[in-house]
Image (cartoon, rainbow, N blue to C red):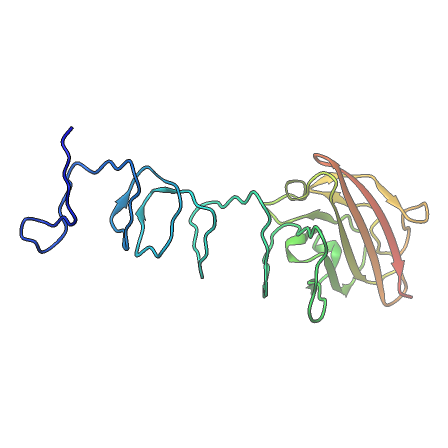
Length: 232
């Protein structure tokens, strides 16, 4: 086996680094102040110092990564716990679960979807717009609202078995207007009404409040606890 012993390698002119057109196989440790170009294969072991730039598609295995910002074009999987400090906003399409509690600084607010119309004319209740829906035009007839996430996402696809959601519908009262039934994702469900029976009329003035606690028991299988209250 041939061996080259040298303290420093340069190109022929002595002005730069030598070129290895067929690559370099290194069994031991490689130390570098700056890495550039493309890296292939796996990079493992202990790393220290700074990296001037890494490009290509290498696999990097390390104990911890510290940085100021990061951008990912694909999915990110985390096996442990993600800890947030001083988070201003969390934008979530689905349901956020806090394992050990939520510390809220400031005023607790919940989004309300206000519709300048009647529930009977706007039967699709899109939870992507809020969990509380207020209809400001006086009702005129009974209505069967359909609860979903939005036009392309079903509530069944968003909720997991064992999760619940509370949906509140506030309508401008009319004695002939009420909701005795709902559908979820377009499918009929059985409502269990507090007090033992479904509503048969609405209030004479003010607002009527329908509240539905939806519990997912299995795929497309929901238990619905319903309540109807009159403000007058």
